Amino acid sequence: MKKKTILFIAVPLIVLALLYFKYIFGWMEFRWNRDTPKAYLNHTAADKKKYAQDTEDILKKLQYFLKNHQKSFHSKEYFDSTQLSMDTILYSPDFTKLAVFVIAKNPTSRQLAPDERYDWYYNAYCYLGIRQKDSIDLISIDEGHRSYFKKKASEALRTDYFRLYATIKDVNGEYKYKYNLNDIRFWNGPAWKEIDDNKEQRREFEKMKKEHPENVFEPKE
Image 1 (cartoon, rainbow, N blue to C red):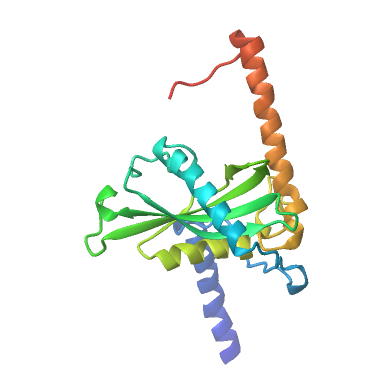
Image 2: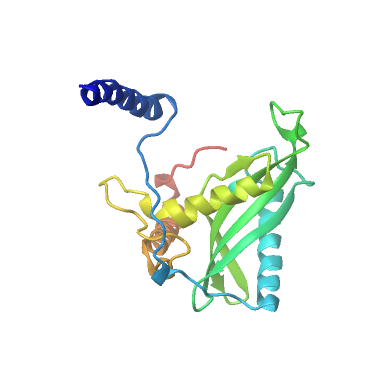
């Protein structure tokens, strides 16, 4: 009798909790962690000199994006004194592809509603990179994470890209990217085909704009 009573109380509570997280808290679905199997963990590492050079080159490019309010840095909260720091660079085995975690540091006075308990806040972003001879082409792939603590912003990226990225689904309910960024299989996975497809679409658009501008509409910024 007691077991039935407990179930009678517990089931409605669970249903209410599911409805709360789905419609009020903002979850559209539950995404269980899908950790990369140990057998497929990517252990590729650059030597200190290469890592330092790549860090310098990437930060220069990101500084350009920031100065011109491009990619992740379109918001007016970013300004000349915004500080960018490299959190992590992941490499493909042949070093032709990269994944970059970068953190931007701003004074809380740049926020619309600053929390006076803190002097700084941090935004953490992920980029994918393709090495092009002597330069690196960077592609922004997320909207970032914000925190008043640098460590928490960094940890949020790791959760997203080392545990949850493989769980993202497409419109058909299929796993879109299949692998996390710390999976050795990621470097030949669907994420890169999506990048290639987007580039091809952009090339076709630019060609159309040049050859038939009357057929192209671009909204004013």
